[in-house]
Length: 473
Image 1 (spheres, rainbow, N blue to C red):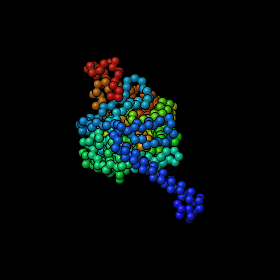
Image 2: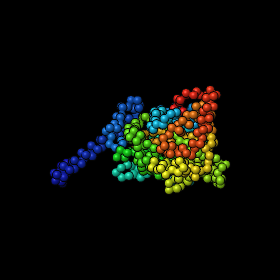
Image 3: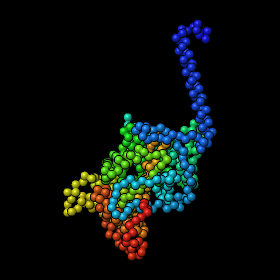
Image 4: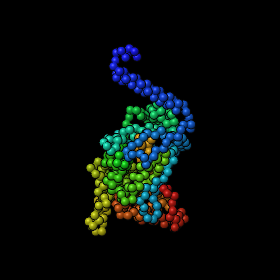
């Protein structure tokens, strides 16, 4: 210090001393942080101090602090998917129609389900992504000042999915991992190394999570479509990324970047603003990390019989690969490539019934000119959906998954109690719901459902006053 004092003024010495002191403090803090991290890695999870819970009331809209989520232990599935029948969801009731969210708690190990339809769904999705992936799979860029890009959430989702699938279905999925990192944020579940790639064993198909599009990989791994919603600074949730490949009657390219309410109102969803909007927005805001939920929805679909199609679908075309119209309801909606598909204007609440001619609604006249496909047990399908909501811990995004099931009415009509129940449900729809669900296209099947119900009563399969069911089955 004597040398320094002889060469530098006192004010410069003070500055130098302050810099040295600051460097020492920073070095100590870095050492302490590394020591704490090493100690935490050596400590069993059960002995770690409890992490503070996220207080949604204190969190500003659009802000999310990554959470070190303690994942529940998963029980491996006891059956290979090839032996599992599709879940027979029948989410309709006798009596009056009511609009509700209808959510139920979802056990964590039932988040993603597989069944014997996986190979066919995978085949359809591979074709769809290969031929028109840019219109079915997408990430919306950040909307400055409002909401972030959906890319980080998409990446988080594919890793969450790979971790889940490899544990829940170890006979179907195999993963390779990186070595365990000293940085716990770079590891996978339970402190294991981060997943590098995942293989769908029966399909001999491997995906590199570090190089491939996370949304396309995620969609190829499962039977579900999905939409990833991010909260904006205005408190609304925005569709910022997703893969909607087999929606049937809506296109993700029309909805990407929209907030939750615009997604529904632009699709003319009946009674959304009056019955659902407030409760849905409130629930999205409050959805906890550890409490995923499930709900069911349904519609009725008219599908032209393959042998009736003139000309016959070309080999390698969508209808050749997907004759049941799982991916796109062509019989009902026409071309998927129009600026707005043909049915859209006929489900708008603003349709003026006063313009009806000969006592027919505009929608009824539309269906008579749109298709000559008759409503028969072979052409009418129940299209039910299994929908789940789960929040991701690092980005705070909410993943909305949609699994679609199709069941021909000729099969439904053999199930005790179902023909009468679905006939009652279809008749219970108010006019706006009936228009939205295109009832005029298939209501000709109702007398046949009534007849089946009467026969089931005569055979003693159901009683005349049996009006309850084990919803949603």
